[in-house]
Image (cartoon, rainbow, N blue to C red; front, side, top):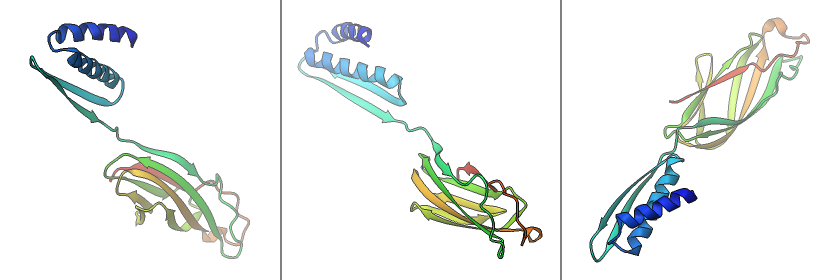
Length: 182
């Protein structure tokens, strides 16, 4: 950066020799901002106008936020807890934290991966602005705008009839998720 400042002073002196000290300072500031902007996701455009009495400058700065959809946290039991021997019902909690900069939001498709479980019911609590709907073979959780979403997914499963009343083996987590844009 120090090497750039020396070059910058030479450029500013030669470009604004007759415009005065204020124009040189503005040129240094704008050139420095454009150097800094080259390493970050921003764009800077500068225009200069000077006459013998006054100097002025305009700076058009645009900040571009890249599209991001990231799962920060996804906590769920690695295997399902034991089913109730009378009802064969299994309940489990999944906690998720998602961040999105997508202006139209995102959707998350949830599908069952285990054939031994059936009668899946899902309830969502947590962040306002997120909703759930049934989809083919599962559920779809959506949010309509950018933001940070902390949701708790309350899963309720049943074992298939062939497994009811028996000590079922521990089953791996039966839900697969995929993120999409609406």
